[in-house]
Length: 259
Image 1: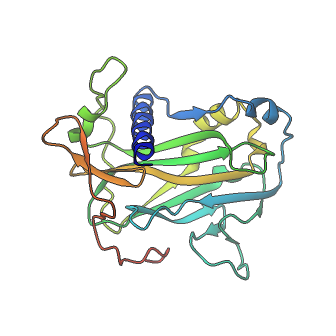
Image 2: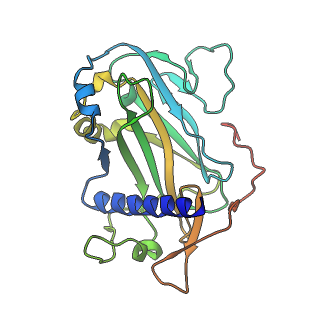
Image 3: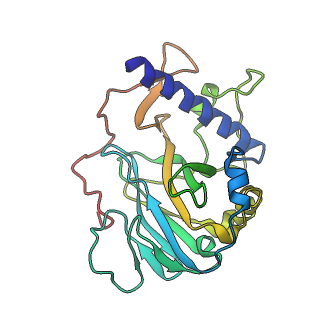
């Protein structure tokens, strides 16, 4: 079991490094061109109808939390208990009515729960296989906010083994403790159209899952796959995992949307 976890962790780091390399090349998308293609081509556009949002809340020790997702004038507050539906309220994982282009009107609020400043965030929008009844993967749109600290650059290397260098135009996110950043999906619609449009009409998208994949802090600490790690001074260019359960802040802090 331990070896399996370590292998999964290594694979995740490789995927993350590849994502950063694609980011520098202007590409930050993943598409599954498997059997879903033939299935998706049979899907007819559903301009109006029921849509579903699923927000991954992460573990207790997650440094970032999604506090709110808005779709036009409707709002989803992750973690809110199901009950009587209030006006314009969306419940996590429950269908709601929306029209064409619904997710282009989506905004995502991300809060820093830690006592450190976050410099870079990787947010994933997952588009599942249509008409499958499951959350089987179709495509991922990765949205990167900010800049990985220069101290971490040697950790990432391209296919030629050279360190990945980030352009000066990328500025740190500078998301300080307790602060929130708002992501407007409309700013990323061109790349979403190119990605999802290869598989199915955008009007056929009826479900989206939102997940915070990883982040970097201004002191070089990294959080990825639920694990915090720091630069290993004894092995330049490598990271050292921190103990399980570590959290850079007060774990008793509320994780509610208002907390």
